[in-house]
Image (cartoon, rainbow, N blue to C red; front, side, top):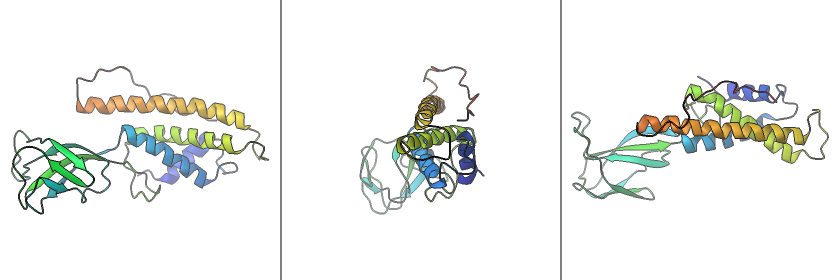
Length: 218
């Protein structure tokens, strides 16, 4: 499984700084945090969880669904041993940590609610992440974004400083700007790819989605 150190090495290679003479590992890790935050806006983890109702009510606590950022669908009633066919999708509202089921029967004690939801992707070793969850095919895109943000921050903070590198802040800014634009383009391609998994009616606006030449050092 890919861990943060593996991805960090790729960014350092892109930045031509494998010895960390210019960028510290902390600076690169902060850049990964920024890139992963943007990635999560287009492709978070897709999780299916269940909640056992504690009290008869249309208000159901979602506190057991750790890391939840967005609810997509609610299935109730839900019987794991004998699945309802078709699923009983419910209308719902979310207020803080309380899921309010608007239609159908009122949930009773010990009933089970199936919730399809999003939670952030993680990288093993980054911000206490215990596993790398994003698809392997997208790791290079994350590396691209992290490199762009690392170069962008260095271009802003290095004006007037003595440097071991012959590259100038202007050079870093130009490289970061181009790399960041590529990163944004790839995020939109991932958004379209993931949308097609859910709804086949979404038009393919970028046929022939390509991943060639993502590796382009500074």
